[in-house]
Image 1 (cartoon, rainbow, N blue to C red):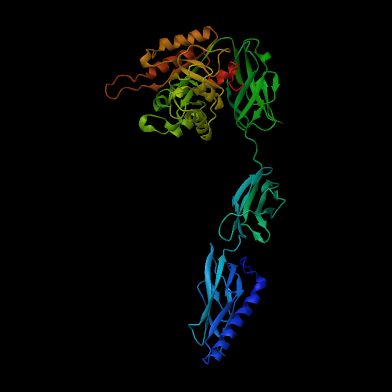
Image 2 (cartoon, rainbow, N blue to C red):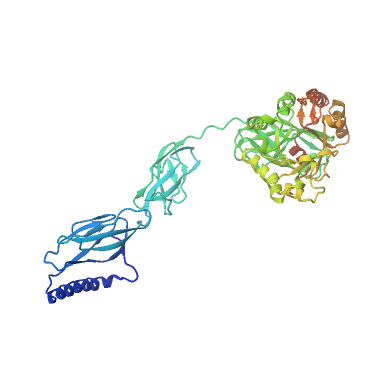
Length: 536
């Protein structure tokens, strides 16, 4: 039973108060007797105040004077009270005031009332909810379980929880963290408890480890390097399936230890000494205890190369240009305005189309959130347009490492606030959108040059674009071709859209590239080849 008293009414005074009330009653009776009048009935109650928690009880006593019949009836405005004056506080979720009244059976108008402050019961652990309610892991793998404790009011409460397994030979569990480890095939029930309160039971199924997927190499990214490059080739990524822990990469006769391994990619650094002469190197992967995979060629070249890029994320480029590149096995960099993904009414790609591009090996680049001129926006919006858009793409499952400045607005210099914000977003390089020219190992990675091909510039023809490519190849440079819309016209006049290019031009450029054995890379691959990285 919980009870407390106000500061001005300590419990030690309760008996004294009762005696005072009784004395007053006797005095009243005596006064009436001396005056020759019949005594008047008087009722007093003790205690006159109390403070209780919900569900607690308190014994009240009625003192009746002026009559030989001292019986009373008890009533209350909240909770319950017995015929003997035992009061039980009601359940409350907030502090309430209740009253207990003792009324004389001789004269019901004669009564006394006590005030009770009723507080909610202090929170105590009532239930524990464990999640997930079911899970499955392979032998040797782990599963984290999480438990949340609630009090009797449904509010979360801090509690010291212990996790347990019904079958530690199948699933052992760390009693403090809730991390279960599959030990052998079978099932185990997982619970969490604190004292006598136990959670719901979760079922953990432990399955045998499946046999490894066969090693299969899909592509190298990039698949070229330059003779005499200015440093190590820092990021050769082998894309495929079946890569396991401890896998190694065979770069010709050299065995390389990866810097990163997933089941679908392996990344290594190739020493600069391997790039002394023009040659083709066979690259394969070996899992521990297995034979090497089939190999893919890596070309060490002494000539220029090209990147094909599309800005803004137009669906016309996806529908009219990407199929041409896919048919030739060429990959592009597709710069995306994140707030416009899914705006099909205005001609932008859907999220599903963007995912298809990524799965097919095209690179998804950052082209801001809303495509403003970045030097004109506030610092807060500048961060949103750069780092915010980067976060959008990352959340969607892409790995953007390059940025394209909207309207070619990089703030006018390599030290501008715009360039600093782009670097802070985490990209390794950024590209402009004017007649910048060509790139090489001496280029500033956050101001890569590009060559735009579009109607309003008169560069929407095969001869112009292939001329740029010829120049780059002959001078051992990197040229980035920039396209926007494809086969789009003004709906009112039928004239070509100013930033559009005919799809036959793209087909002609691709035909030229294939016929002349020119290497095409994504923008991020170009940075690796030229050993450029804004984050270094």
